[in-house]
View 1 (spheres, rainbow, N blue to C red):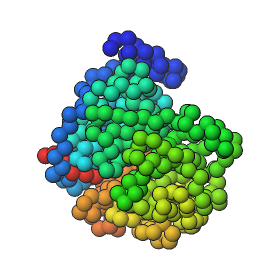
View 2 (view 1 turned 180 degrees about the vertical axis):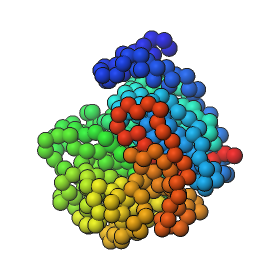
View 3 (view 1 turned 90 degrees about the vertical axis):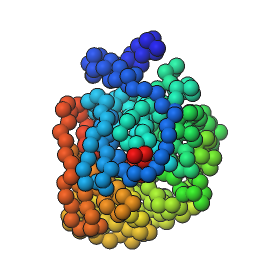
View 4 (view 1 turned 30 degrees about the vertical axis):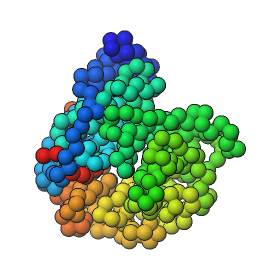
Length: 376
């Protein structure tokens, strides 16, 4: 184990040449201290919110967002590093959090939102792990459906159908070498689940090449994340930049980078209707309460992704998460607090705030959130 730890310390140092070696070593050591998982006992009974931010900060609420407790913290970090944290997902009584970007990545998980361990049991050693079972492929986002948790990020997709007992990976480095579009060059791959009717996972990555579709690249998996196809979708020609993509069942919505326009799909991303002006710009796209939210300077909402209505001026910028009771929670990567609304977004109250002890760069607020039922 010691030689594996040394390997990743060296690797992380190369990735973060400006970061002090002792900081890198401390970040790696903190990850190794966390117990392995793979033996979670889902008992979905108690409703819980979980929100996450850089440094491996995990904050949860079990009283419908009234009060909040920080239940885990890794090490201070920035947008890139071992403890860069951007994504949390819920599935079947278990929350999972991806930590690490531009550095060795790990998945943390909990079946009660209080006690956190590595998602993996350690029995599956992936090629990207280089012998360390705690390390997963670099992951930009986690998504889940039909009991499967899928991670996407940088040219390698990973999936576990059994809460960390086993994993499969799909590498895109040479998978599409015969595609007439030429060499694939992508990054920052986020994903959505298209609903139980299709069981499809759809992933959107940016286009790092000099040619090709500027909306990015779309990939689809119809076997629960085991294998992926590079799609050639119709209807996205008018998009000149990649934005965000979310879904409510089979209805998918994608925005351009400035969120000024939206596109919709009901066939798993094969074809898209748009562009549809949203009436806002530089807004965060999320789903809550059965509708799509674009929260920025001029916040908007939509039930179909085609027509967008103005939201009350009180709606804060950032991401919206809804509980089963309809309570709304707002977080943002540039804010150090959590806001709550019980009247559909008309009014908001601050219910939690924090101050990072060591800001190392990047947006140090809360990046993502989810709601689900967990063990008491």
